[in-house]
Image (cartoon, rainbow, N blue to C red; front, top):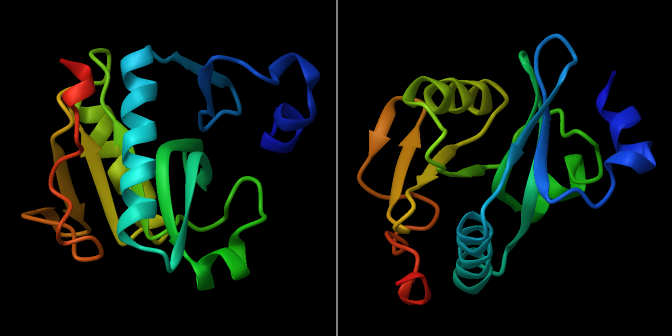
Length: 161
């Protein structure tokens, strides 16, 4: 099965969880909690508020060497969107790909996703813990703060407590 077949299949519309394809074309589904979804929304809002010169994707499908991975949130410049914005899945990763961590995520899984997004051109990959704390990475490893969003270190999470 390929990504477009999944997108066109009415059985897969409006599912309350993320769908990805692995390197063998098999569907991988991850149920999302309401907290996970709330963090996605808070990140999306923060990105829109801080920078008006780009666009925010939610559940952004990126074609990687190991199938289609869906970044929980992604930020792309206007130039990126003009060039790649309407592909599905995207052949190139947006400048920033964000993964909201769930208890089921392993360290190795997140390392692999970072590598896959960087291999497709992401400039940064962010990981958001369940407490809203962000970790930032570029292709060399962890960095202290985002270069594209230097003032964004934590997502406002008062509503989570």
